Image (cartoon, rainbow, N blue to C red; front, side, top):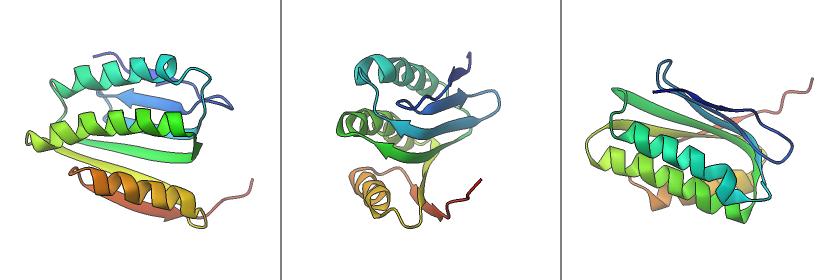
Length: 129
């Protein structure tokens, strides 16, 4: 299965979904103008991957910000992983948030409450360049 690599912009997150290297990452900001146009290929890729996943799948999410429309699309993505988990696959989601960003921490907790898939929370400190 071909990897899905979408270079992030000021409005869209960086996406790396690569089953051959077992890397599944979403990083950056998500406020695309057309949220469905941006996320539908990602959802299609994950749906296809879910039919024959790796022995273990860990999705790492390290978002600085996302808008309400993006949060709904992220939930759809997480629900695909949740279905994989419920069907007996080894799946987890890692939610990384800046330690002083309560909104992102709360968002991660909200998703964790809605899903059965293991949802691990990680805080990190902002590193200045």
